[in-house]
Amino acid sequence: MPAGDRHVAWIGLGSNLDDPAGQLERAIVELRSEPAISVLAVSSFYRTVPVGGPPDQPMFCNAAAALTTALGPHALLARLQAMEAAHDRVRDVRWGPRTLDMDILAYGDRHLDDDALTVPHPRAHERGFVLVPLAEIAPALELGQHGRVVDCLHRVAHDDIEYWELPA
Image 1 (cartoon, helix red, strand yellow):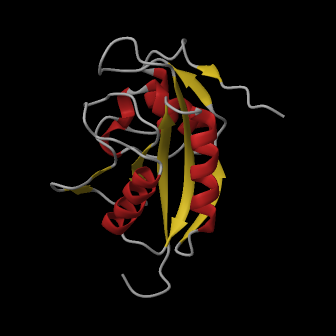
Image 2 (cartoon, rainbow, N blue to C red):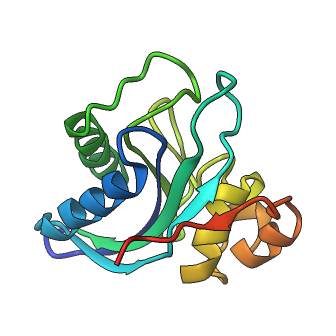
């Protein structure tokens, strides 16, 4: 991508270990300090039930953010994964507990599917914990063939998702 080109990307953030809301707050501060990233919007935080993975996990704190970035999709993914690692993210159990999880949900209107990355995210359209915060900041965002975020949200259960009250 030519120098100076910036693209809008939407990411999902989640945590259910070691002060989940604090993990998300720190990750957003770190995103704001990245020279190649500008944070446009951040959703409220939501308390969500873990989906998949081992039973008896703690509840998750989830949010979504809209960014502009000079990074290409793979470089953005690498930067997000480096941030996860800096938060002591361990990838030993699929859908297991984690200190920080950051996923690229969409990258402009780009469609990409390779061994490292699929955008739009292949399961975003069926996950209330992604759609509720994303609908707050980007209700008209198209998730590929699945349609707009707000329409996807109407097709999934999300009654158990609660606002995560942050301390003053």
